[in-house]
Image (cartoon, rainbow over all chains, first blue to last red; front, top):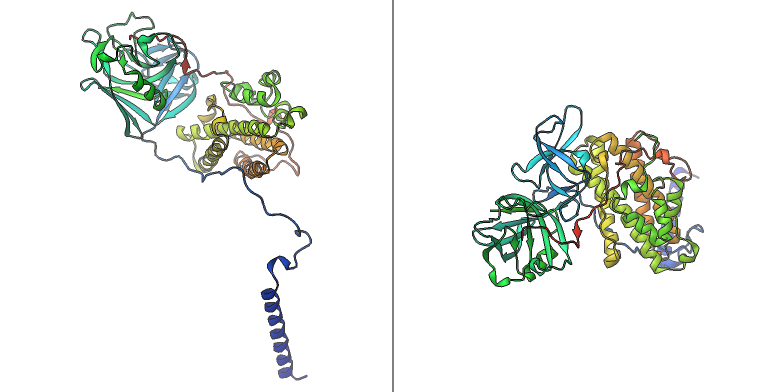
Length: 263
Length: 228
């Protein structure tokens, strides 16, 4: 057979085979196509019971605040150094018996490699100090911030920088003023039998400068009231009073550890 | 604490949430006994591996218990990675691993919380001690947690009655296995231990997690002691 004839035969055979394959795949339904015996009869992958969302890396956390829980009683220092001046001694528990919290402001390592946490503290006077990280256990974050305006007698709760609740309040009378400054909410008290405090109360790190001998140390609370007619007003011993409906709403929106600014 | 001492369940289960989850599957007495079991040890992995036969007929109720247990393990990891990332103590490959794996664990938490709805247990608090404060401590603890997660999913999967949840558990299990291989490689360990997975030994779980038990209490029913 000449080379030209051989090429012609090969071309015809290729065309016939291609046409055959095309016809076969065109006219035979997909389910009837021959398949590997190894996968014949196997079902599909099946439905998933959980919807796992797309993973999200941590973004910028400008509006996030971190609290740390005290594992043990600890001494706060003026600098991240065990020999630095003593700022305050902290108990592991609040006067209500809950875990004592501090608000984390920063971190540093000393020359020996020990980690220190700069924190806002529940004390009078200099309320910022350094704690050894070994004194702190669990950490948590919140995206809320509470602002108490003493001039306007108004409380504003913000989440991610946006106001989500406003309410009229009662604050300390002239002789027992509510202190101004930066503090935080450190516990929540419920189901006690005292209508004076309303249905729910929050403990804060703020302390009265005039009622230091008050049981528990004169800490300022945020709570309901049995005298809503006095609000808004300068009527308390330093605590921040809300109408009961407002404090219940606050309790639904505000987690423990929320920073508090009293202006 | 020496390098050879195992991490106990009680060391990281600050407020008893994991013990509570085990209690739902095994009964409270055995769960309490397991608090002193080594994390990664045979007893705990055996417990994670399944419920008693009498309870196995529970079907949906058992699935809820298993998903709750999975959620707590995922919370453990998610909080761990998130905390170390916020502390900004990692660099290079470890930082990349923590960032990516942390995002995965948070996604697992969200998925399980949605699936459990109101039956989801309260978010627990964990005490990681110094494990989130430096690369070496992080690496050792991350290996322990990832190996534990792989072992726990593997153990629970055959006892899930819903095929849909089983399919999801297997999807997560293989991801956890990849996490384990990744961090094992970064820790200079063999990514794959053998052709057939064996339970972790207590010695595999090098400890940096704080030893002190810690119970978080943020709310009380006591009387307020504020100024009023």
